[in-house]
Length: 345
Image 1 (tube, helix red, strand yellow):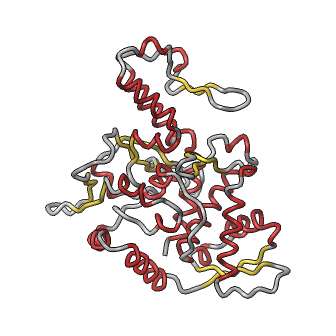
Image 2 (cartoon, rainbow, N blue to C red):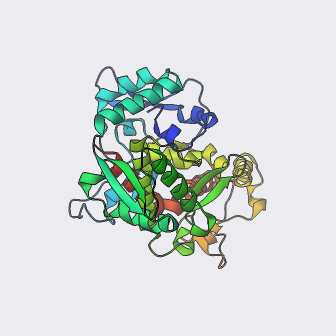
Image 3 (cartoon, rainbow, N blue to C red):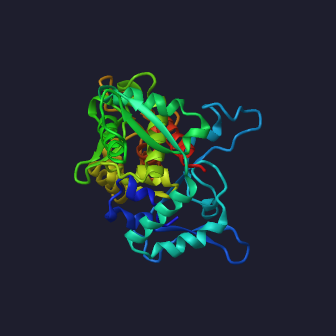
């Protein structure tokens, strides 16, 4: 997909869209299969990666969170993987020509198309009642308790103890207040990824800084994002480009590290280009920025394996995988599950 309505609803800035457009899903005219097509003038040189679920063995319970199809993995980009969504579902090929027709349209026409699709796909409403001062806990708990028949519906909100009738204004206020609460620093769920872009990334330390139920929170937040699409709401925050790419199922690249940490990106570029790697005294591990300064091995026994001129490219690949995905794997897997389940019709 070269463009998605999700970008306009969840804060990806227009200047970030060019690297997302680098890869488009196309149909092979001969065999009808879907493949990744790279733009003639690529923004990023790569290497490139894609996030997909593991292929589950038959003995697993498909409803379990531990089921491999519910846990995402980063893997090298292969052109034939374009036919698989980030959920592992096989994408129907019939809609690709329609999306390509939309690509060159103006934003206003794309947005009008989205609203038309929503009006045709979602007819029913679910009403939520929450107190303003308990908007975080009550809202997330309610969206988690919604039955499948109520998940893919539009939303009506009642703020308990207040007289407002939801003709649209209360719903917008609810989304705004809830979003501010979700991204509050004291929640420990998201962190600023790039001050220049004013964008957010999943907090890699969420497991220790948030409460023990933080994965339930990410699943609930995914459901909120999905409901925002169904409700046609624009949320007041920016997701950083690599996180947004994961949600879209769009390929990631080495250069996406720039969106997370410019200094780290520049360091990796230097390691890639220098002939003096041995002098840097690096090994295949990362010291986590936590009070306990935990050390994470990028490969088995990595803290005892030095980075050399011969293995520096492997080191860079492992670092990119760790920075973009590995350290947030459980959280982003929960987020994607919640997002998808709220958007299916």
